[in-house]
Length: 235
Image 1 (cartoon, one colour):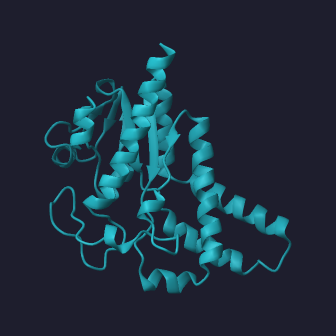
Image 2 (spheres, rainbow, N blue to C red):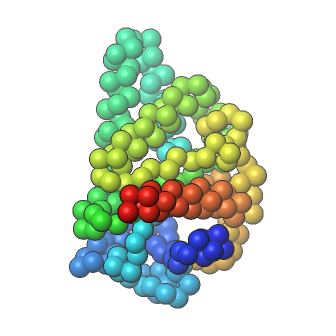
């Protein structure tokens, strides 16, 4: 976070934890939290509800878009038809992804916000892939097919973002395990709940630690700085 401050950015974390996220709404220039006092904790006491007018750039982090679960499901379905024609398999994959994406509440919220404030800078990154663990990998069993599905999921998200004026940030390869389909376990150990300040359970492979955050924040800062430099050059 110090790097953002050095670069002249005032950064605020804001959101609603767990299932409360699905209840965030947009109204009259603000993101409305279903639990404003809890959102204040996340934002270090600054915001219960979030006025968009206070910010030049908004980073949609996670947005409850978790790729690992749906990728495993689609991979399982494709296994049952992979002996059929390539065109049929490709069409099925595209259809499965489109249906899944159309039902993401995070997608709908991003669309509402970008439509309401089109002049702002927007960046979206999905939740990280699950950390490497035998339960997940044993369930999938086909890392090659899983990698293909993940690539298509990322491509679909990226294309949608491009259509809506949002920059898309794909999880850095530097954070991935050697298999390329999960996050390196080193970025998962000793993760802490942002709201409660307590460690996640040892069998929580979804949440990442501050080392992961450092990588993501550095990359996001680079994206913002690149746009700032481009704007200066154009001006």
